[in-house]
Image 1 (cartoon, helix red, strand yellow):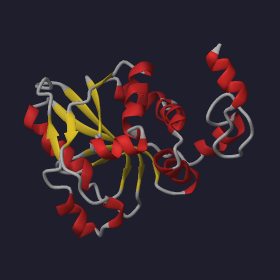
Image 2 (cartoon, rainbow, N blue to C red; image 1 turned 60 degrees about the vertical axis):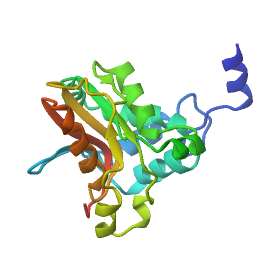
Image 3 (cartoon, rainbow, N blue to C red; image 1 turned 180 degrees about the horizontal axis):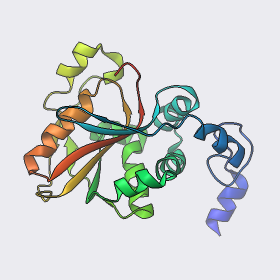
Length: 211
């Protein structure tokens, strides 16, 4: 009853067109948003990366709202975009654990949520993969978005720590929202490798065309 009352006072509206709708996005806007999906895989020497869009257009706008405009409910939208592709969903379910890129405690307390963790928990509920918070951000570094590519690489060194070693011989999928230079996920993968997983790959929502 409390939820019904809250919904009545603060009805959910579509994040794109603003029309009142029971979910984060209405069917018409979801159809438009799907046109930005590309769902690709990149394989480098030490990295396998899955991404569903480039960091541009409406998806970029929604990611910025999700991270910085206090709209945690958009996790449902991004989860739907990820699992909407049956092939990608099956790939995700081949992994034992999905691991969110962590935030520093002070930043998480300030924002009220870690956007990557919201999605990994949602993916756990809607797929066969299990959410695992085995990484911790132990240093408060400068924001990556404010730095040059060269500065990003040094800014992220020794920032993350593996706090759960129960990943030996497991298939790990690291999850982040945006991939720009790759410095963050590469540092996280390096830390995950200390746990001797069978494999450790990366899934992101958006990838910068420059990265």
